[in-house]
Image (cartoon, rainbow, N blue to C red; front, side, top):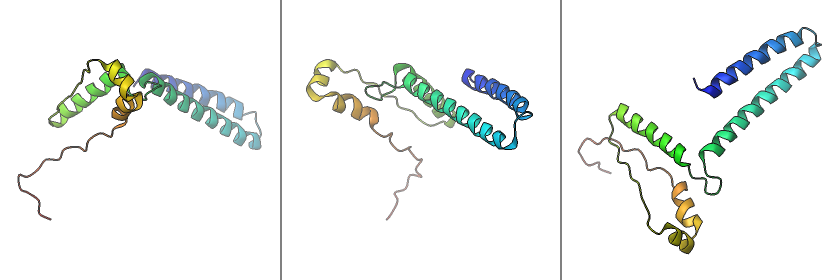
Length: 133
């Protein structure tokens, strides 16, 4: 369980205790309103946490993963492939004169397009025989 998950559980517990105390002194109509308000606060907090994770893991200009997020995703993928016994071929590119290439062709074509490219489909094991149509 991550630190954010633990904080969320503590917050939920505190809200639950506070809610039970408050509900003892609130009319039925106001209970429904209070419940909706608490739900709104919890949903807003969840969306804010997701937005903060996105800001921390992706470049705001290109939308590409940050270096730390990329390494985390790469490690996750290596471990997943190892568990499944599937082959994995990592590919890293180091472009010489990147600034000149970027200035010539533009950020959208050089940085954003590769970052937005969909992942290739997962390889499926073949039986060694050609499929017929």
